[in-house]
Length: 141
Length: 488
Image (cartoon, rainbow over all chains, first blue to last red; front, side):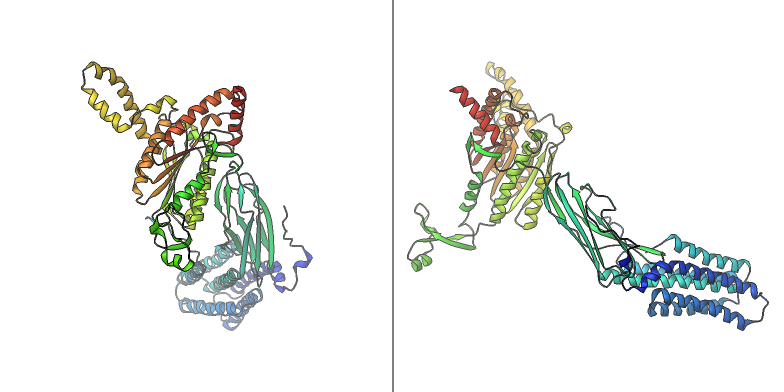
């Protein structure tokens, strides 16, 4: 029985793909960037107490983290379309956050988490329809 | 699209930030939740786009060689996967052979593609212990993204099929004849069909006129043109149908593996089917087990129908021995003098009130006839013919392929079939020639064969019926040569 084996260490595997670098190191890089982003958020909270008036610095810090995130999304996907969609969605979510932030925090949290959930689930359903993967229940007839 | 553990861990981090923001009353932390949500959404968006591209560019081909084999033989399956341009996702393609095949492991059947690889192939071997027609399932393509966040399964159409045929007796082993003389029922069948030529409407061809033929068949225009008498042939009338009735009861199990009665029955039925296919005649198949009818394909002439009949024939197995009906008893040749059920029924009713010495003497014999009638009524072969054959309106050529164990029922089945058919061809497998692996007592076998031959001849005397024996040629020759030697 003869079969060709895929060998990840095979030297001729990398012909032209810079993408291989991304595939091998991308998941590690993504973990680092996401961890940095989450820690960055906590750090901002720690440096800027609730009573702080340094709004400019705060906004600068947040913007820096978000730009880092978008930059890494582009680095991994190399897709302007994906980056554009991500940026638009980010702006919409930030807008929702801005609109609801003056009320109770839990209400803002529900709006933000609900919107993200809806976005992710909606995309999932879109994929099922686009790829014709919707499972139809068996007909009773 | 399904999320992996990694996906759910990242979701948990985002939720953690949201919960902390609520607990600390610091809405700013929700921007962290938004960032993580957007990260996941972007990856999801990219995955879907890449997935759609991958699906469009993926070419999967499964080839099976050979695709027509005998049971327990092996086939080689080659799974080739190519993508142009190479996908940005990781792919795993696994062939899904039918459950009836054996001999391959999951790793043999799987091709793993790393991101950027363009093509690969794998070859594996399958063996097929069960007869039938089997279609491969579509290969399963599992796609994951390089970040390890999502995975999805696609199925791409490439479903070759394999026809596995039972080991049947070869043409040289199969003897078809009448009383030890080789016969060609295929020729007779062809003749029967060609007799129908002329009754159709669609002109087919012309041939030279031969004298005993009816003069009205002469095509005068053609004859005048060619200066010779010619007859125009017409396509066989559409109404002409061929019906195959194949018995696969427990008694058809008799004989060595691959040379059982049913294997001979199958070979004969397949031969008839081939002739019918050549002539494009509508063919139907009714298979009868001990529990009743098991396949019913009403006559039709199409490629699909011929293939379906072929498949069903080679899927046939004898009814399980445990299910053997009590009714299907082996009859002795003395039953050849049994009267028709209708007459027996009438006579029994008439004699019931007859107190004369004559009536009293005859009553016990006709009481036995009631058992006979009951036995006939319960027989699946008789019931199949009674129920289905008369429903077919068109002129029929009926083929009954069975053995000689249930002679009473077989006789009745043949009589019934002859009433509803233009001609009936009966093929009987003589039980004595299938009984054991070695012919130990040749003389006893010969005597049983003679009884069988009497039964066959009796069937052949029924109007519009031709009866043949289908047996292993070598065995038949052995008993003939041995007994002839003894007689000298």
